[in-house]
Amino acid sequence: MAIDYTVFDGIGFPKGQPRVLKEKAQKNAEEREWERTKAAVDARDKRVCQVTGRPLMSGAVDPWDRLERHHLEYRSKNKGRRFTEWNVWSVSAAVHQLIHGWALRVLNKAGRPAKDVREVDHVAWNRRLVPRGDEPCRIKKGLAVVDLDEVRD
Image 1 (tube, rainbow, N blue to C red):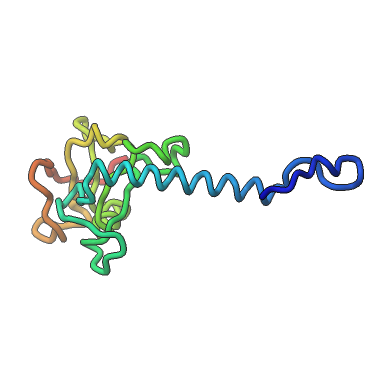
Image 2: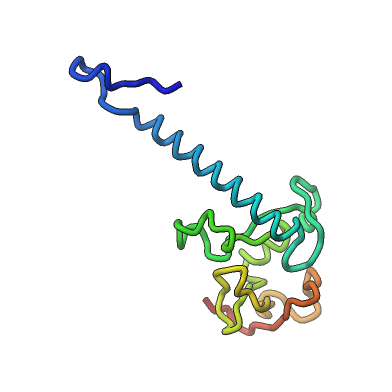
């Protein structure tokens, strides 16, 4: 139950809600929104890695089986799309590391980084980091694979 500080106006108490309570309420609202987004993404992607096609489980020990969600357009670049389900993709923890390490890129038809799951056309191995024949995983059928000789953004 929140305390109504307005009854103390004029007798030395702060006006309005204390900052710490406002921040806690905002954090709780963001957590609820993230849970809603995860549920929508899980329903859409069926808890399957969208790169390898492997079934995923939350909390699995094997990083190839552990469910994580990847923001196609990073949260730091566009805070407004943090909770947009079309910006979030289900991937394994291992694939997530490959993507963030620039070894694997998720691209649209123009060869630019995809910013929406509906525009994902193919993935690309960065051949400066992953030589041909040393790919750590197989890409699922239906997702085109290309090679990048250099890192692009």
